[in-house]
Image (cartoon, rainbow, N blue to C red; front, side):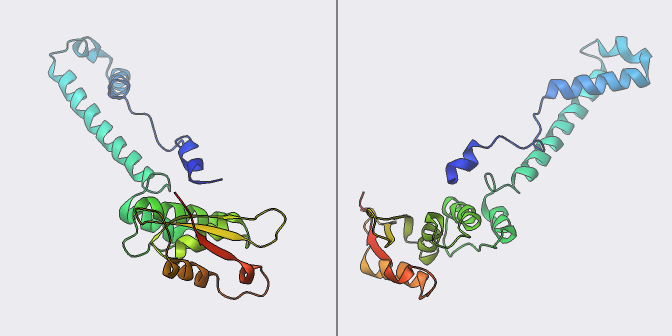
Length: 193
């Protein structure tokens, strides 16, 4: 599972398809049920009652659009800015935005935080690297052959993508000493573009 997982999700049921014509037709039908004598008047496009119904239907459309927007702002896939900060705060475990971190990178860290609970998983290594510095664009954990040592390739935000020694040290420090894992044998290297 990765960030492409979010893009593949359909909109939730709370997000409603909007149609001015459907809202207007529903309002007219409701009014005709309550006041049957008005039906011939509503058939006239120029009737004041028809214009009032159009205004009311348009305003309802705007309200429903705002409700859709509010619902989307609570979803990781769509949230931006401070709305995304709140999604991160509600994540388990909570994730705080790093200084000067853009929405795309922060969204990825929020997604990874729930996927990286298992120590030693590729998601965990990737999250540790991303948490180490905003200069880390991405990272991938891998093993070579049957060697049990985990290696992590770190792609930096530099134009070349090359990670310097200070950045690799910051990522390695993010791991810290932990006797229950193979972290101490981890190898950190720069990724190549």
